[in-house]
Length: 457
Image (cartoon, rainbow, N blue to C red; front, side, top):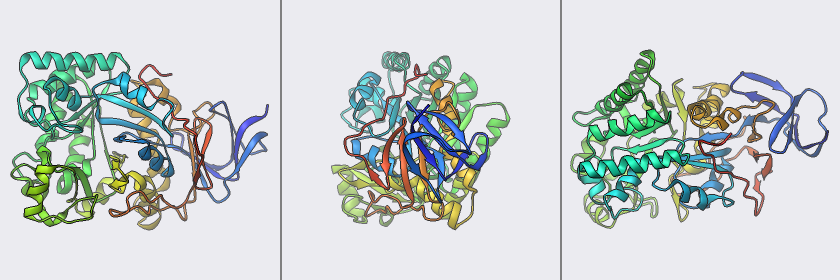
């Protein structure tokens, strides 16, 4: 039988079985049909000489505002991108919006932030600007929040998303009640912790204690988002706590991205009184991504009123390195780009890890890095969505979501002033058997991405 597509002359890596070998790959109807030493008959052939053939990368933490994000991520080897932290208040509308419009596969959680904003009539757009961030919910409001979270899970949401640092007035009881629902539906809770850094009070250590306790009480699986930018100097402590929780039988996982700066909304609760102590920085370490301007006390207060994105340079390099190379962490982007401006992590996260941490710093092996980008995120979600048993792998029967890259040249080129610059070294990206990126050029008018729901198989 002639395959639709073959990839030849490359070195395949399957992160699940740890197979590393020079073999050829055959693809038909979006499925890997052959992995062979010999010739594979195909209608179209990709020559991957001097390249690695890997499963496409799975990003558990993206914020799709427009299709530019999907396109930038595709150039970085991402074939599945998921909005699991903030999530959405309307699962049906989210999936309908991107159906036939996405370069790569997509999915979402039902999100506590947007649901709380909906119930409490908060005027904010991405994060709360009113009651949802600053007021304790009434019993009636909690019942409504629980209703909408349950409804989203019934509609196939992949997880429950939480941004507890943005909803600081949310009680611990409200969190536990929602973790109970997550446990009932066998979904993971993807949580932005309610605290930062190592300095008490309200630091990341006690914030992690809160959600580990909620996981232990309810039985819900816990995934801690961007441990690097939340933990900062406390990263080693947090990872030790997660390992301890796992040793005690809890289902806890985490992620990081390879940049010392984070990005968030300047008008959010994260910059209330005391932020300098928690972040361990002052105004001069804050930058507006749209202008490249570093802030002063005066401009900080001005922009707090007008709102917008701000980049915060707050994670020490040694703590970031510790997070990236730690065996517990997955790699995820927290991608945000609006009108071409934002954080370089959107366009460069995966290439930066492979180029800088694997090749240049030699702090992590290639196969361990690929595990963090493929099989580990797939396994995080496969209990809820069985389709992920066919993703993150390079095996016969797996989905043909594939990236080829040159391990000797791959590197990120995006920066804080040019965040949309695509990486070097990635030649081909295949989504569902569709050759989306060829010789570093994206195929015009091809949108092969499909929405992934918990009911997908």
